[in-house]
Image 1 (tube, rainbow, N blue to C red):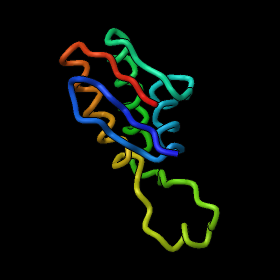
Image 2: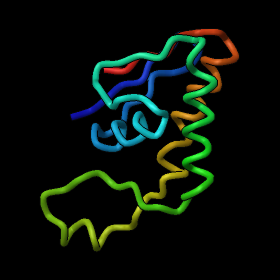
Image 3: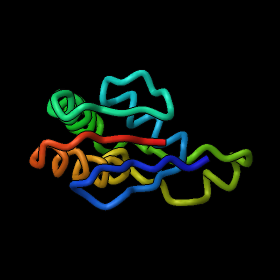
Image 4: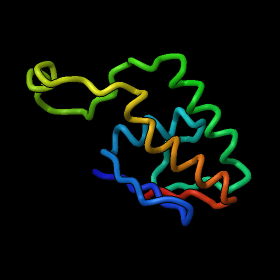
Length: 103
């Protein structure tokens, strides 16, 4: 499953579903898909996500695979790298006073 994050203030971002749900939960949201953040709620969600990344920047955040062996052989992508596009989207939405939606 893929999840798209959209706001008029930034380009659409598409992520693997399990990674996106993890990031949504790190923003303090329930993790439900589809979902949205009102413009007024974005600063708090952005702060929570940035705080989580600052605490554990090197934590691997890889997509779930049915074959653990393949996963162990591939390089891991850190939480900091996975969260960066979403942080940029939330920052742009906050500056423009726009809502963010995902589905």
